[in-house]
Amino acid sequence: MAHMQYDKIIARLNDPVLENRLAAAKEVGELIRGGKITRVATEEVNNHIHTTYSFSPYEPAMAAFRAWQAGLQIVGSIDHDSISAAEEMMAAGREIGIATTVGFEVRCSFLATELRDKKINNPDSKGIVYMCVHGVPAQHIEKVKEFLRPVNRIRNVRNQAEVERLNDLIATTGLELIDFEKDVAALSRAGEDGSITERHILSAFAQKIIDHCGKGPGVVEFLESKLNLAVTGKIKGILSDENNPHYLYDLLGILKGSYLPQFFIQPDIEETIPARDVVAFGLEIGAIPAYAYLGDVTESPTGDKKAEHFEDSFLDELFETLVAIGYPAVTYMPPRNSLEQLKRVQSLAKDHMMMEISGVDINSSRQQFNCKELLMSEFSHLIDSAWALVAHEKLSTIDNKYGLFCEDNPFASETLSDRIARYAAYGKKMDPNRPEDIIKLVTGVMSDE
Image 1 (tube, rainbow, N blue to C red):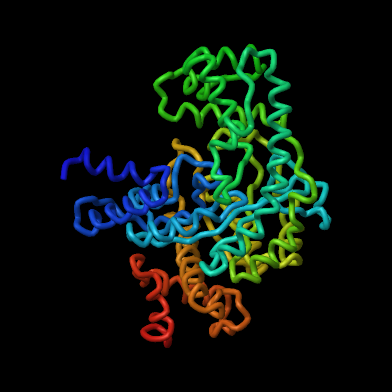
Image 2: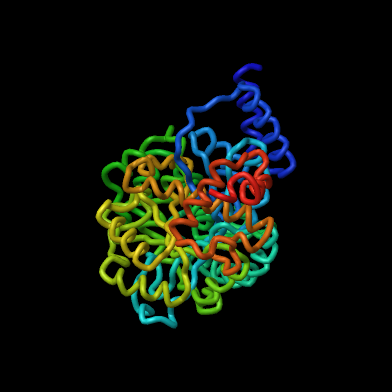
């Protein structure tokens, strides 16, 4: 088969129609198993890939393949206020032959805690925190959708108000005004329980600028003269290059970091569920709620966050609050922080007997799926955690009692680190093409190990 034919099949993994994507995943899997498509495998994993169900250039099937292609052993879908990528991610992973895990990310309220007046891990808001709910058992995916629907209904009222505010700001710039339904909602999968985020608004905004100026130096001039943004250094060169294949995402990044605050509207209490309620819901469905550590930012790797202080000055107090709320885990991104920052997080997680989960959020075509930091000795344990997460999800899909944090878990008497090691071993021996067979490892071959 010619290389061009491979490319056509792979391109169909990003087809707008689900059935076509899944058919392509099956074809790709057959080519992989036949040795027609190869890769260089690593030990790397990534549990935090965004898809088109929040904001991303990747459909779940394409995200699964790109992760496999990058050499990853595990790929996880995490979308803002949505879990609608889950079924496709699992099906595509099964066909392609990569282990999968699914969950969702949500803003929640810390307003009932002593940290209510602090910026914790959210650059836009005080007292509001981003958190992930990892390892959702398949039988509870519909329950998660029901849980998130009211959040999205309320959020979309705010989204529309933000578009109106943005239109007021750009009314005299010469840009065509943004239509919420035609320009923003149309970019989303809101009709399939996907979410509409600020990135959708910014993408529509960026496209209006490109339509008005064309790509290249004209955009830089527009940003500086019409929006009063300082465009310097590397980003100026990137936006001056009209042949830049990541142009829209790069422009979106500078707008998010520098212009979003001018039209952003703070979420109200109805949109941000209390953290204690989100954690309780996550545990109730057998998932693993995790606080998402951001840490003080000096320079943002993705260009969408300005230098700012977050949790580091009150990290001890934060972990005490997390334990009081009931969080069983913390998640962080090794490329985003210094080794000193993350060693402190690791120490506190160990002291409070919390699981550590890693993942680098992917929502731009410029970003790499790899996370080579996981191969460093300081982070290699996160690979075992990821395998344990996969095993937790697959086993608790078969029987709730096998959830890592379930009180009825047959291994509940073991320490958390021993349970993670046990589940990591199960995960590594699992056949990603037949993940349901993992139960045989628990009840048979490995039950005495």
